[in-house]
Length: 140
Image 1 (cartoon, helix red, strand yellow):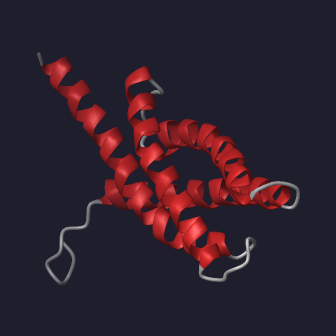
Image 2 (cartoon, one colour):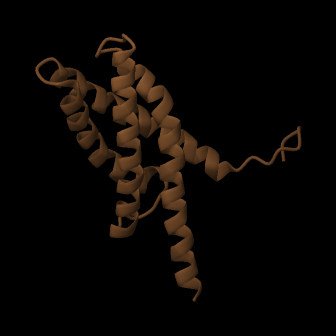
Image 3 (cartoon, rainbow, N blue to C red):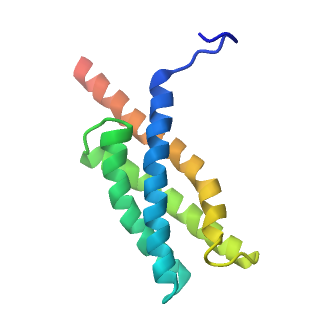
């Protein structure tokens, strides 16, 4: 307990710090791929290509570094599902911000501001769910 009576979960804080480090790296990778490709192709295709590259790196780092789990078909499918939701959220936001008048170079700032916190919650749920399931199986 801290002085104000709030319980601080050190594991959750560690996850948030690790998520932030990985998130910055993935965001940079995604944005660089997107930025380079949007110069020569449709922004939606460029965004998707950047997302795919970032997704591959993100899955491995999320499993191993953030949540300290093995990469498995089960958590990979859950991670993919969470990211599918995130991908459509990002595509919608990207097109919305461009429609609102932001440049193709600046629209991702708004996209990331909304989608990164949502993505953390979705991915954290996936890895925590599979960790609970694995613990139940081991106890049986």
